[in-house]
Image (cartoon, rainbow, N blue to C red):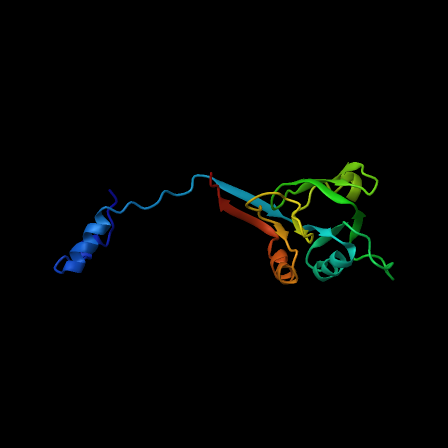
Length: 178
């Protein structure tokens, strides 16, 4: 049974005081989490979605994050200048991971599947963050992992512009089991 240093100071002269003392006497504090999950994010962001929707977000986030775009559709008109981020065309296949360690394979327009390094370069085996603009989430999970934002609406995209730059650094959370 846990003793509280202030329990001797409780007055037991009243009904409320006796009830409080009885409640505290049986109180056991919850156990401390035994394990922590650590995440590290350097700010590499993969934006998945049509080029016309992804490029403005890459431009807006480019000052605080290192962006790459997996364009699921080509732009409606040819851009007047270079895209604001490294861009590949295709669809995500087997996206998995969490904040600081997202990996995926990409199906190109011809139907061939490639690893991330073949699409975005040898130094890009994983991404820290993912912003998914498609209607259907690239991750089929009930609970989405930290660092993955499914933003198929304008409201969610606006919120992502504020959230994503805050996801750079080192983070910890308690490990929970289902």
